[in-house]
Image (tube, rainbow, N blue to C red; front, side, top):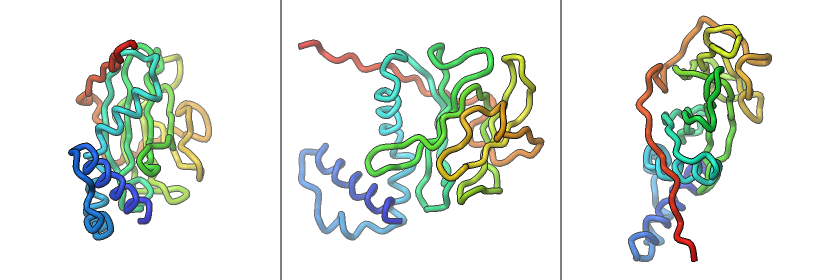
Length: 192
């Protein structure tokens, strides 16, 4: 919960700075935890865009689908991002990222290669995090849904090999088989 409160304080501070006014110290210290968890979720879309541009500066234009889910049960949503662009994708699929709030930034707790949609969140959990599934097919491997369990540090990076396992179970769909993509163009910076 401290991480959620810190994230909310950072968002309040950033909001105050961007409007040209100083943040209200009383507002920072009295932000209820419910407001903090709400502020950390869908309002973080701009932060996700910024993260992707910084993480993959050479990728050029990209498309991504974005979902929010509290995977670790701490009251703050993690971001699940399915990337789709020639830079990332091959015959086996495209990457799915799982990003956790880390103060004002994000950290990868999953960088799942060769995945496809749909992406689901299971009721089951491993090491305090919800299990997820991604669809797999193409690239010469088996087709179906791969179950990914958190190992205490991250989700498996390759859904086609152990410790990932094929499953017929499905969870709550967070990124649909035919997702709504968000276009992301690199920002041109003026040369000095």
